[in-house]
Image (cartoon, rainbow, N blue to C red):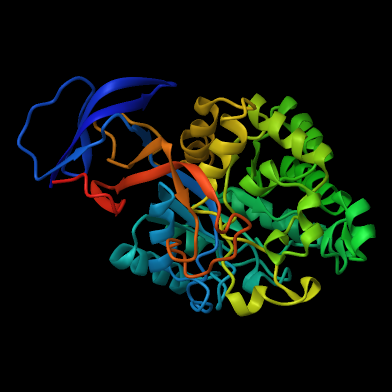
Length: 428
């Protein structure tokens, strides 16, 4: 199929160029200037921006086992709606993705029914129970791109060291959910003034920081590549900086909600402000924004965590942790960070595209002739109302429900196929 995008502002190498984009045989074949050719589909971008397709290193698609919350079909539709062409599926499914059969199930289902590329992240330990190393070798042969027990954290340092040594033998990055259970306890929100005011048990930043410090040292000893998921405190960032200054292969991600919200958001007892790690202090939030701006934080990941209404509509301390994020990531960050001047649009796009691609050595993240046609068209001036009716995720657990957000995704193209098209009929 031949697709021609006309009258676009094309984001290429940190700047916009005006022109057209031609897609043939799933690749970008011409870029920039006026392109005149007979095409199967012509999309008039009308001055909207064409960006590389966004890449999310951290999504929970809930398939298999929890498909009442989300599945590969709805999760990748939500991804396409948010401009994402690639998502990495975390292994906390049921059964846990800790073997080749589970890996192949996700890959086949995504290939047949997905609206985005889906890369599988296998478990570090069997059943993510933190007791025995998972079948990394066979999962690697089946195509996993990393290992993680995300949602859980390996507490035994000796076992974690063995896991890192084993993973490094197969060139598999280790992605950690840093949480010391003895320090986190049964905490519900950040341990601070708001927790005291609300009478809720707190999760101290130390619970995250202790594991990050431990795992950086273990990774150095094992020669492993370490990626820290959803970093959230200023002290955690200091630990990462020290590791990077030593030249260690340590990277980290931050979520949109940790960049935009702080612990004050939990005062309403809205369970869509409950996540792990919890929303931290304003000092921590500002440290994360600065670290993203400076490049200390490598990339942005959504930690898309769907939950059904009946699960979130409970008392705060009984509701599950997590919110959806694939459909709101770009507009939330564009509104709160770019439009306010805190970071540049270039840096935001980099953190959603080429930066995550480099961490896990994934294709995509750039717009170049000869590269795969993974891209998204966004009108930065148009707004989207994130209502229950237009959220494509099966779950609706977001703190931005019923809010208008700028930066509207008009079209997403993955591997040369249109995977999302805005309801406006500006195509022929």
